[in-house]
Length: 451
Image 1 (cartoon, rainbow, N blue to C red):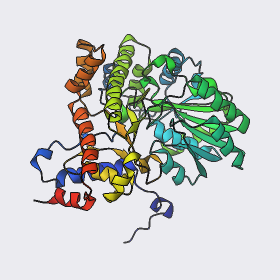
Image 2: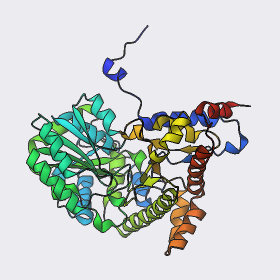
Image 3: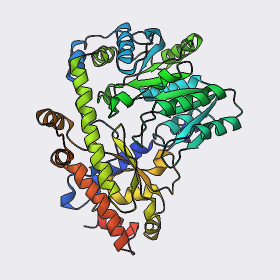
Image 4: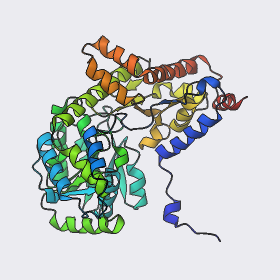
């Protein structure tokens, strides 16, 4: 019997991160060189390496017996905890009734795009998950390229909005930003909010990396700047290293009573409610405690140390430009100065650059520019500096906190050897590219499979 797949599904491509994962698994099994048994240097996957906070783990164990369906918007204890969490950390006084819980912010953003009419404005570069959702829902969309500083201009936003005919426009704002690690400060958000009010732009503010802001005093939620027009999404994945828990939340704008009813209908239809034991476990993660404060302080400090090291090493490569991260565990590296050399080596796209770096002898995984909603010929890449043992490094940091610049460098060398070695391999790749004018991707592929 032949099954017919709906054309809408046929038109959707596999998400780039999953395609890369498949490629890496196949490469690992095919590489014949014995020294390659370690696999690869992992700069591609955006997952926090730290353990889930013990408070959250213990709460999950304690509530493993909770087998009943939860209320669609989330259990009251969790919505109350999230409300207090936002007031304590982000200075927002949010009624729990404005908070809806979902199975990760990725799903909640999809749900918001389902119910909101209008054209989507997507600043680029962007997290690789937004565009597939927009396309799947057949939404009209326009890219908003960022400037040289890798932030979009409020004036460019205004110019684009004036060209759009829809009564409502939807801006996806990711702050702190994946893939650049940059942070929009209060003044920048106020200028963006002014344009949004003027042009009737609704904002979906993805703030999943808020707690990773290195100087946390500088983070300001768009929900505080533009409360009447902003949906704020956040969750456990990045700040609590609990991506596998699949729990996120959305804060609705002020006075969006009618819209909440429509949203509840969608959630009830698609997944009824988030896992009840997970919701009870999340309460512990969002409650204010000394244990969670320490966890946030330590993890963001280690992210910053790793980010500064990665930034300085890549910036030292002649021709490479990188963003200097203020948050997250990413930066964007611009390798376009090597475009001519890459093209001579038959590497014409950022995807080919990614494939070349993962092959022997480099074994280095990155996410190329075409996966970040950039042009296929843009040789930029996201570098995620998280390839280390988070549990061990957390304890080592507590036992001996590095204070000086040299101590921080030594911390990285001692605690993240794969990050150090992977960055060396990126440098080696471009050194060899410059030296070998006969370099060819097919030749490299053949060397990978040779006995």
